[in-house]
Every structure is written in C-alpha cells, then in structure tokens.
Image (tube, rainbow, N blue to C red; front, side):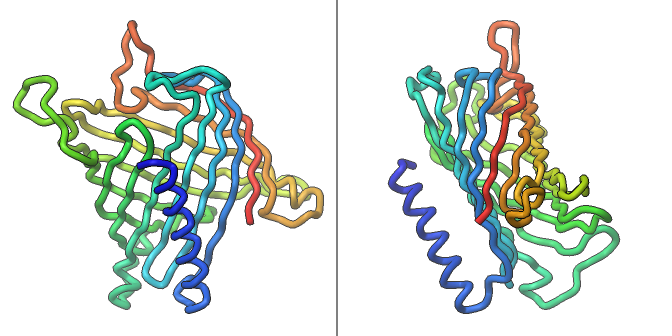
Amino acid sequence: MNRTKISLLLASSLLCAAQAQADSPLLFQNNSLTYLYGKNFKVEPDVQQTLTFEHASRWTWGDLFLFVDQKVFNGKENSAGDKRSFYGELSPRLSFGNLFNRDLSFGPIKDVLLATTFEFGEDEAEAYLIGPGFALNVPGFNYANLNFYYRKPDGNRVDRNNDGRPDGTGVWQVTPNWSFTIPVGKSDVLVDGYMDWVVDNDASYHANLHFNPQVKYDLGKALSWGEKQLYVGVEYSYWKDKYGIQDSDAFTTTQNTTSLLVKVHF
C-alpha cells in the first residue's frame, strides 16, 4: 500500500467520522498526534523519530481505532534501503451486545465483540486479523480490552522452506490493551498501552511478544491549558523476536528501549 492510498484511507476515515457525528451513531471520538524520539531499536536503524496519528471512536455498532506511524531513521537506511517508513493499523470491532440489543455482561466481561484489524505498511507488512474480543470491567481502569486474533498475512506466499507449507499460513495472537489514570498533585499521570503476543509459528513468522506502554504526564492540566490535551512522558517498547524474526547470536532481534514522548489531542 503506497502513501497515496494511506492518505485516502485517513481522509475517508475522518470524513466518515464527521458525517456519522452529524447523523448521531458516533458516540465519542478523539484524535491525537504523537512525537517520539528513541535509541537502541533493533532490526531497523537504532535511532528513530516517529510521528503518529491516532483516531479512537465509539459507535452505536462498536468501536474503532486507527493509527499511522511515520518513522525517520536520521539519515540511515533500513534493510530495504529506505531512510523512512510508514506502518499503520485499522481496527474496527463490532459489538454483539449493541447489534442484538442484548446485555452480554457476565463477571468481569462488559461486552462481547467481533475484533478485526488490517495491518498495512511497506515491505510486505499487510496482514488481516479476526477473532473474538471482550470489553472488560476492571476497577480503577479507564478501559480494558482483550482480543484474540487469527493473524493472516496478505497475498500469496511461496514455500521458501520446501516443507510443504506455504509461508504466511497464519498464526494466533492475543492482544490486551488498557488505560488508567493516577492523580499526581494538581494533574494526572496516564498509563496506557497494549501487548501483542503471537503464540505460535508459521513457516516465515516466529512467535513473538511486544509490550508497549506509555506513561504520560498531563502537562496541559498542570498549566491550566485544559486537561487531556497535552501530554509529555515516555513510551517503553519490549519486543521479543521483533517482526517475528527469531533472535540469535548472529542477529539480535529482541528490542528493549524507551522513547521520549510529546502527545497532543484534538
């Protein structure tokens, strides 16, 4: 997927959100831009700057999350010869409780959903994910979700290992995400994030785990500019066997790094 298609996707998403808000199926939306600077990345160049656009919304039919990363490698090139790259995910979930007008809550579960994700980017990054999702009721949390996906790469893959199994036949993935707020003086610290845990292997994609929380101070609230608008903090990334590439003595793929962060909501 090229940059023109990505731009059209973003424009279409925002246009649909605006139209839906006028027609009232849109219950809530939030958009943000995040700047990150970090070192010690693996697989890609070790120093990276990232600009991320995020959209989150809740609808009468479920919820939607979209993000697009634009990475800059500070003059260095990745394995594909690029000095910058992009990657994004579009993740709509359909609420069975809302669609069938039924209360599906039980125990810690508030709702049952059909969770889907489309991963897109450069260098064969496209993949489709689908499976059951659960909205959870966890005391003290702003939200908590747990999704189980079958993850299938896009396109036709060849059997490079000659084992009778085409590369990219699909793997299972578990993805929790969460958010909670800690009051600190006259402001708050927001802790949110996600974990992607690919639990099995296929011929070209090794099991891996990516733990990616953000810890952010509400600077806008502290300066009386308005709460939940301007944050500063850090993003931590631990990624075992990054991109499904098994770590080895010859090629280190397990990442453990922290990036500085500035985030603006609008």
